[in-house]
Image 1 (spheres, helix red, strand yellow):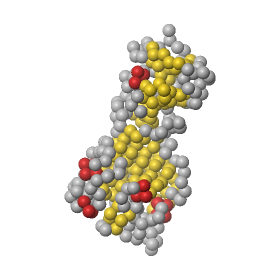
Image 2 (cartoon, rainbow, N blue to C red; image 1 turned 90 degrees about the vertical axis):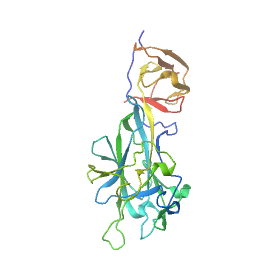
Image 3 (spheres, one colour; image 1 turned 90 degrees about the horizontal axis):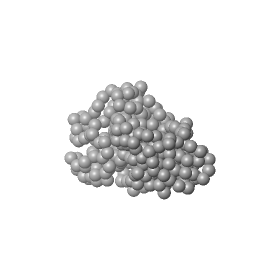
Image 4 (cartoon, rainbow, N blue to C red; image 1 turned 60 degrees about the vertical axis):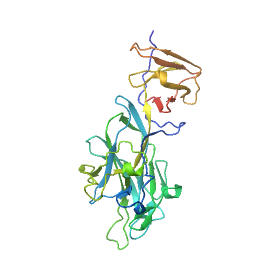
Length: 316
């Protein structure tokens, strides 16, 4: 017997009760840092655009058929130059943009925010204060700044290629003729000995309109080895749920095994389940998990798989 169902949509809101889950790790390098490592072994580097465009890169995560929602994208910047090293990122830059797009599409700014005040959507911290070494630029040592772009709610497909870029709007430098250039932190994945997810050793150059201008091989131009931009992505799985009164059914699929869920983590809003039942409720030959709750169902059904990956199903 089928349960009368109200099909819920993809889980676009953030999982407020759960810590964010790291799905792609290409974070800061931890080995062979700075000039002390030697020119052939140095792993860390910073990248800027030559014209009015910006430097970007790409990544993919998850399995084909899965639906994910990106909650946060984290990148790093190194703004110091011959003039000095700013005490805050906002000293040199008025605002910053995060660009994003799928595959061969042009990139669009999905976030634009000022750097003179912290908001929930953008958190800027000094990575070097948290233990990362200073960046060595020909004998001058500069701070590294971490940018957390939060509350993104980006619906993406598992296994698909996505491209991104970060660019700050520089303030006028002393003399009033030029603005401060923006530098994104990058590294050689092999020498850096940190996360190397989806690293391919190439950079993507975009014009000011977000159109792809060039794919750069740093081992051929501007450097002597491969490099990617450092990035971390935090996301959760989006799932389909069927409602019937005070019960919610998680629908199994080829990419979502209801037998692999940690039922102790299930919640609907703040409600704790009163009972569970595994059965094929929609006749597709796969087990679905029906969860009984004590009260009316408002909000999102959230939980985690046994491997710790969070998921959510929410009303539109």
